[in-house]
Length: 197
Image: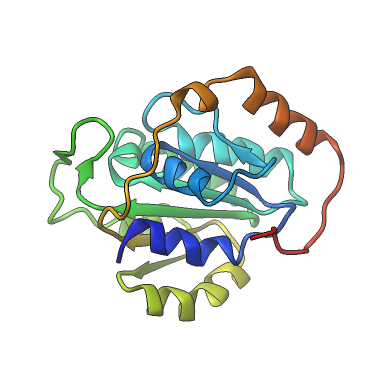
């Protein structure tokens, strides 16, 4: 399935109060759907999505934390699977977009792309559950059950690139993005209403 199509499906299930931690091309595709105040976009180095998401999940147990990670990014920090599992945040959903490449950094192949099994790794570390989807219709059908389950959960999405979204590095590294997130996080407003589309 195309990554932008998968993100459009996910967008319909994201609540206003959810924190979304997204990195690299998944982040740029997510922002193309319309930025949200609770989009945490200030990650810079590969591998940080899962650990930043964990910190936010532990600090904000009343909010769902949705992490959009890349396969190459997670390979840079595999130890985070054990750390997340040990902390057992019930409000943590870890989506891994698997396309077998370090896409933003030149589309170089990740090592062992034919053998890496992130759901199996997550379960072996102690995640409460894991899912894998490679088709947008199956994702749409299975997503409600995945989001209804208690975290931490890993959901691997087998994707191919879709439409290339603008890579707005200036915005994701800006004081504006950080200020917007901080203000929304500190507002104290937690609601289950869906995000505007």
